[in-house]
Length: 250
Image 1 (cartoon, rainbow, N blue to C red):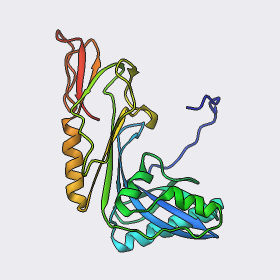
Image 2: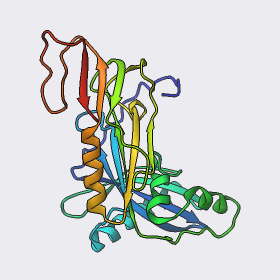
Image 3: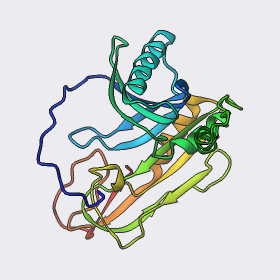
Image 4: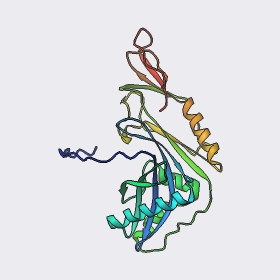
């Protein structure tokens, strides 16, 4: 995505069945503090695009200890002694944890913003304090919940409209469409293919998740095409009709 030449080698990995999470951590002088666990919503199929993040995810205590143990082993293995880490893991049905990848950085996909809204932790300030050798403030100032949902296009075409977006206000602190009407869009095959996002916050995780899903269901992405209007979850049927396609996000 940065214009680098492709690597002709092939990396073969095991497929790990389970639920995907990420652990957001700050390490200072070799001691790691886990800020939270993030539950990730990804698309099925080959591309596995992240279309939602929610935090803090509640894991059973034994599972959480196992996850933290594996994450700390990974952080030590890659040599992070001062700085942030974003470790993606798969937790199997038996509670076992497999590390998928680790980034020596803050989590992307607005995870830092979710941390501020849910726990009152500013990870950017914490990262700066860590870089300057100062004690970082990593204790939650509140205990709430935050979730982001991303919008995607059903297929390649010209973005004609996005309707049903919520308004920013209490409980919905951010709504952003990053793709302008008229631009060419396509199905998200990587995270950079997401069209926009909105964030929902609140004290109750179940209520926040319900509001996020209901809000997402009211959003329609309209893309010019040669097929009739189509809603997500139903097959597109070629035939006469308007020369555009509408689908519920994502």
